[in-house]
Length: 113
Length: 113
Image: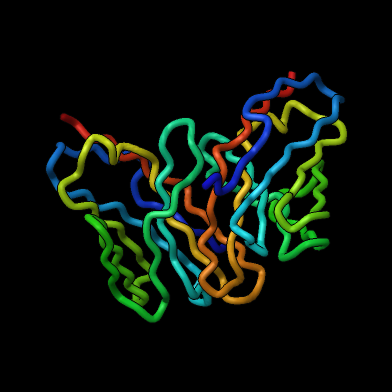
């Protein structure tokens, strides 16, 4: 019973490099989310998806792109990494509203040098 | 602006005592409130939720109280244990179909043996 799985767990990038973070859920959830967590800032929503093939911007979308080609996967891309994107990234998934309890992965710790 | 916030950044309690973690919110349109626990190096874990038309909900060793008059939410943990040491976040879900949650900054609970 994996729940929400994020890969990789850790990554170090140089400024300007690109990478993709993968989120996979096995709960057949419609909704998926990407957050970043910085010290003293709580969790901030980057992008989210309300179903396969859909994406929408969250609170801090600049510098990131996402894709939801399959219901179980939600990819977060950084095209040209910047030091300001050093953070811990969390993926979450949920059933349809109204209740919407989000279940989180273990996170990806990203450092951009 | 609208926000979900916590009254204290750190709460220190003796093992066996009861803990009360507080949260203030500003948006009356939210229909669900959720508490999450985040242990060091892990993703947030769902604890308990409460619908906006309820005042109180109990779980195993936890109780959530909602006071809509003063827009205040609290999490009570009975007989606090060392394993309860973590950061606790409250989150509010705005009415509608996006499922988005607005998270507070978090309160660190430290349990002294």
